[in-house]
Image (cartoon, rainbow, N blue to C red; front, top):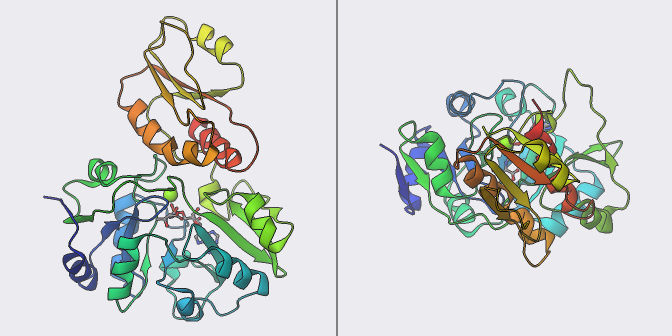
Length: 319
Ligand code: TXA
Ligand code: MG
């Protein structure tokens, strides 16, 4: 049996006992476990069916805990943490020796952030240890933005899910690493590059070696629904190509006038990209449950969070 609960004390005890509990954050729900328990950390990988080479993000309660996790903090990292924490920014920094190889997948760096969610922060305040928390979805599938999404993925496999409502940001944190103390983008996320660059100047995009991805969030196929999904700048043409099929559309602002479309999900009728981002995964979850033959998504404007939406949609379409 799996219980969706708001009882922080119960969740705390479960984590102290080495258990795994999905917790809300402002981005997506995370599958949390004690970073100082290798048994708990191993369970996270097992539950998610996650490859061992894909490291986890450490969640701390405030910037004051950063030195317990990271051994070197470049000036620009400190600037970013001061500007965005608590919030959806993950920093990749040189790790402290105590941080387990299971968290970091054997790397000498560790990913860390302070989540901006009342319930998550209340829990962290109550714990003597930080938690590692990857998104609470089986490896490769769509990240959960509600306790119900998590329940559908893990019911029967864990005793509790910590309730925290719908995630406000709706897409994962932006990940920034450093080479020679200069910022590198590891993953697009719910803070746009433009916002990051306002604080630290130019940010370089990570170039990937295909066989050994440095941030598997950047793995080609990821965040994918079970229904085949296509991304296009020419909706009409693609709809015509799939004529006769049961089609679902994922659109930015407005519906298409077309009676042959089974379902249409509009992410932001007001054209606001933040609103669109916050609705993206919930819309994908919804479309995936409609028994469609195909989902057709439109390419978003390549500015601000439009880049993050396009990044996730591109990965969702990869075979
Ligand atoms: O918003 C988020 O970041 C959510 C919530 C729960 O906080 N978490 C999340 O975790 O998205 P996950 O595990 O789905 O994605 C973590 C990403 C992975 O792509 C992983 O490869 C990268 O962080 N990562 C972690 N440690 C790393 C490291 N030392 N070097 C490079 N990438 C790292
Ligand atoms: Mg994930």
